[in-house]
Length: 150
Image (cartoon, rainbow, N blue to C red; front, side, top):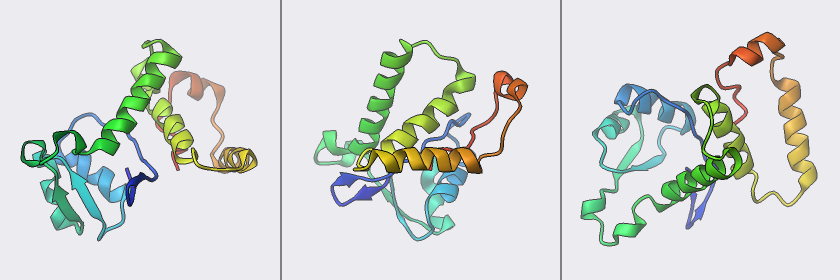
């Protein structure tokens, strides 16, 4: 999640198999520019971020003066996504489609402040045109993320 002063900026979400540094660090490297300040909780798998060219700040809940404020934006985004899954899908969804749900949520979240509905529609059409077409059989069997999160 990007921070713009006290406001939430754009987000990126990706389904990963585990929370090891081998899973988390490549995600950060693909989605965040080197030299950026990356704030995380105290999870040890993030310790390699400093050696990857990021300014790594740990925000450990037990050391924070205000317990509620630790990574509050990330918790808000996760909470909102859970509400979408519970409300829209009644809590029933298949894991093979989860990345697609994340991509759709990211697309909507990142365009929440767009004043023009036309711009949103334009972006959807633009991404539809630039995304490689898939045969129906491959769509029905499930495919990895289509990269629509931007």
